[in-house]
Image (cartoon, rainbow, N blue to C red; front, top):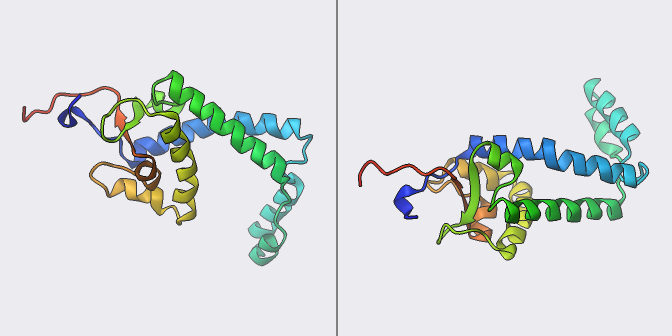
Length: 170
């Protein structure tokens, strides 16, 4: 595959893929982890009370009483979720169910071949960096010609459409 045949996946198609993955991968994993933790992973009663405080205009009180989280169960959730994502990336050649749905996949940025485990892990941890940087790591996808986010740059990956079209100039 030459660079002329590549169609980079932009912000909104990747957002839709991410939303689908959250609903069909991350949420079910989180529910299972929550059940296995017997409810100790996350204090939903405090969360609900904070929502009520925020809705009544008392944001300070909502932010001062953050829900308690069990770090062990949070770590288990992260490890299980990373494992699930890596299994999908390997089995479906760089695509989670959300990416399959919108016909995009993750590939090596230089060779356009399948990503390796190191790239997959780096990209996964890169999501954290992209998020903590005030979401700039994701927003930059909309402004770059190659549509790469910070996590893509860190991992040496790019997200492309898995159906290529001929370049009309060739």
